[in-house]
Figure 1 (cartoon, rainbow, N blue to C red):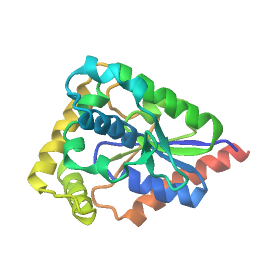
Figure 2: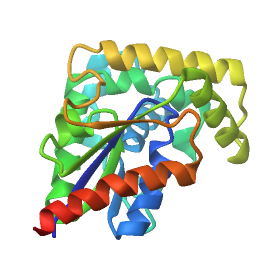
Figure 3: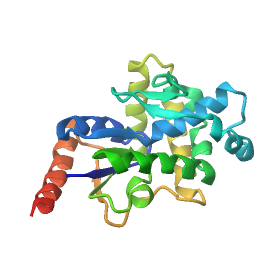
Figure 4: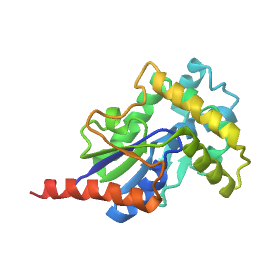
Length: 223
């Protein structure tokens, strides 16, 4: 059975962590769409291209090759950049990159191509609303900005990335605004997405709720 699960939500809502665990549980390919936008951002920063210059960014898209290895690590022009894309400079600029229509269309084409050949769970901000509007399962995770900032700050510390909670909170609020107000493909739940507030839930509780949704859909498809 070919299955597409769209797991969306704002920055720091825990969607990548949950998507990885669900991918393992249901034997799905996990695609972190946000990592793809971060890879484009990293390329621009490393090549002295201003992330706020839309024309300059779009002009180098043909030079950027993004792929995932068998372990789910993201490759930028053949190099594993899984850790570098989580650094502060990338976090502070990725929302500019992801707001550009040409960038989004370029990466959405790549995402849809992956979904043609494998059963996948893809996390992002517009997977259920735009990338895969016909996905069999659509889940949208939310959490307060403060909760998300605490999670991201802790994740940064655990990854050895220099982090300041107040700066992380401000960055998350900025990204929320940019993502929800961009002219093309703004971040929002799909009309038929099931919303889960993870603010006061453990990872195990979120997995349980998502699993109930997925299992219910699998039973419907088997009928």
